[in-house]
Image (cartoon, rainbow, N blue to C red; front, top):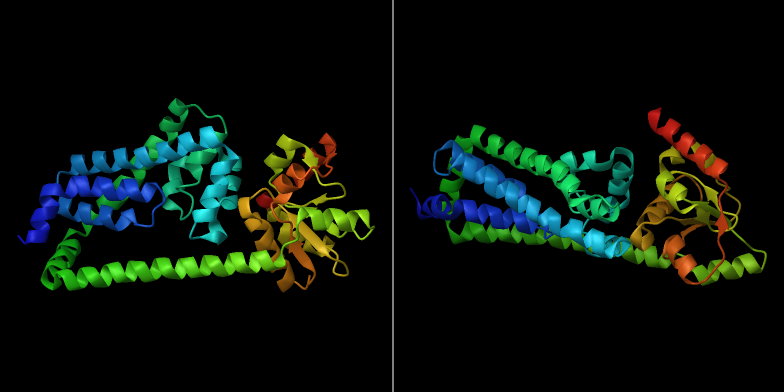
Length: 328
């Protein structure tokens, strides 16, 4: 047995727990490869299977509990933090929130298998008013399923995992440098991608003050509300003159968006990421003059600008249309 395998056999359970906990806190150190390697060592008898599963599950629960409590205490502010630190601006908060609105706590069963969702689902659970007992009742089995899935995969591939560890031990520090360097380049690429996204967003968006000035001068653009149906129903407010259109309906209803005037889009996603993405999609469909509203409806209201109440009948009809669109 090499020194590396001896190290993993002696301290592998604790190292695995550390990697999983760090991964669940949102730091880009991927846990699945570590779980697969641990599963391989379980397959060769170098690590106890029960110990690996318990340590991995406990660490996963610990990380998600931190985000759950932050979501309960800080509310929507924690989503803004997640969007600011996310390396995946195209899969940040909005998609996870949409799934959570549709499936509720069941989302926690598979959240860890979907990139970008494992960190967002727990704070959304805390924001929703879910009790800790109910959160653990759903997130616990989800964590167990996630850990067992990768550990079983590693156990089935234990010969390949053992070969990889031998290769790692043979090359020693050099292979470690290559792996760490590769991870560093991947993170750097994601950071550059995010900065390009944010730079294009800053160049394109319109401020609440600019929009209010245009409205007062009689030059109001066509304003579209992109929030989720549940958000619209819950708040019941929007910018005067805005038209609600769900993102799920965009492919069907985009011809309703005029091509001969300026378009302003807003949502509730921190950093207005969803509105920016829709703006880019509409430009590809021939809508040239389209801009996201900086800060969305939240910034509009915080600036003291007027809002109007949506009729309950209109909200119910729009929500039904969105549901019908998802079903087709």
